Length: 484
Ligand SMILES: Cc1cc2nc3c(=O)[nH]c(=O)nc-3n(C[C@H](O)[C@H](O)[C@H](O)COP(=O)(O)O)c2cc1C
Ligand code: SF4
Ligand code: FES
Image (cartoon, rainbow, N blue to C red; front, side, top):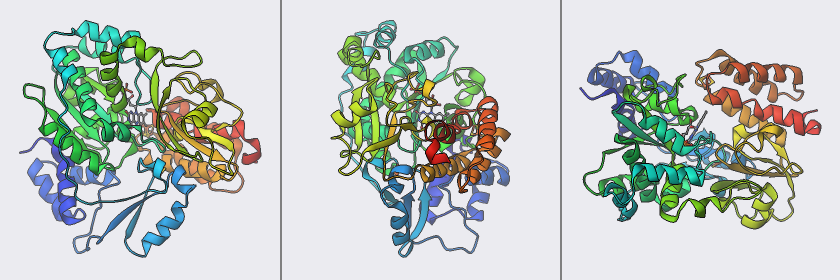
């Protein structure tokens, strides 16, 4: 009998082969994994990418995922969706992670790749005693490296905590970026896949992990092919690296939901951090790090803490990758000083605003980071935006101009959260749905929106429900003329 954690992989295999999942497929999997058929159904139906078909239903001949995220909506996603609907089965998507190429679509085709043959010299230096575990962690501490997945937790401190719990331990690479507007992990995995693996293996060396699990969002099939090639070409003697495929659930980027998903279940967030054994992968202490964090681990250990720390601006230190999309001349991933302001980022790194457009508003941290008006320009850094009712998160910066409809953008984001709420806790399940309904109306009930925000922030289990109210509360606070 295969282990439960392979269930989602097997669901993918069957869907790839049949174009969808038939009741007979789910029954066969239930028998194979010795699970109740309802358990298999409940897992398959949780994930947006699994297409549940009736026994006599033909699968769609061609499937095109059309992005309906903010950057794509401002570049005509609705027209693109209409055009494709005549030729193929169209599935709307909240963000395909290609916001710099908006409007984006994804057509699934088989991909192959060859390994880059990266030397893994830094990893070799670590494992051969050229660098010891304490020195590596001290270097990351001196650099001030914080988690780039959104929460900004100091990386070395997290490593020490995980290493302090009795083993066996695991390392998980979070490559599930799904926050609308975020595509920086795609950039690192496209341009430096082996470097990211090297960072993960260094983390595994420091915390003495038994294995590495890399959870990759399903929207990046070309990266999946590349990582398979890189993993097959890893030098011998390393802990095994298991590549796992997400299935279209934004909440699975939250680390405890991700662990549930890695175990082959629905992605329901847990209430404890993963280094507490019971809440970790397979009931073991687990270190979860974002792709970009692991990339910077290698850069810092190679070039030194001072090199990294010296790059900041406006009282902040370090570098980070900003995913910039929207009305700028050159959207893309920009490696820029931590703490740069929006105007500096646009002018110095993105060629300025698009012709005919001036900055009206921006999302500094994706869908959950709140809208800010052009005249509020705090450093784009952890802890610097909170006073304005937002946060930097994974630094997904979407730029809006006078030509854009902020009400419509907010309504779209509210629908996104309502769709992606896992439904486990009532404030988030009902609050996101109710807010989406209100934001779709011409007149918003501001008092009710405020009450919903209060309850969701106070009583939601995970960051999704706690941060979703930033969408509308930031408009209420900074854009009264839009909300009225
Ligand atoms: C709703 C939600 C979605 C998240 N999505 C991601 C994600 O896609 N990628 C990611 O690395 N972290 C994501 N996070 C943050 C993770 O929970 C976690 O903090 C991070 O993976 C830890 O790695 P880091 O310390 O290297 O940032 C998300 C958090 C929440 C609440
Ligand atoms: S806050 Fe939302 S997404 Fe998070 S556990 Fe509760 S219902 Fe699920
Ligand atoms: S790819 Fe469309 S908004 Fe991200």
